Length: 79
Image 1 (cartoon, one colour):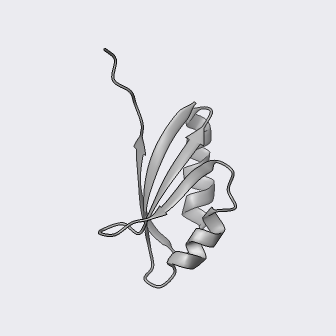
Image 2 (image 1 turned 90 degrees about the vertical axis):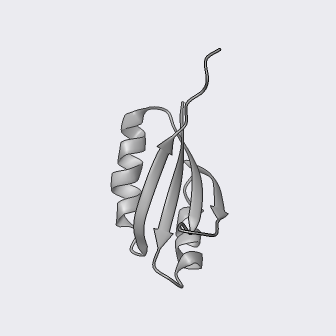
């Protein structure tokens, strides 16, 4: 299972509209409103990288008011 955190910038004033659209997705485990350069933080789970790719390309890029995303794929320390 791949876990990723997606930082999202939306058009000003559309945060609630984007949130309502994103919360319908079962692969998005958590959504947070955040302050600063980004507007939303998503925790996403995907069984493999190809599905995460499709989520990014076919879901996030098609949501009208999302201006930019940055995806951080989680890893663990070995020790």
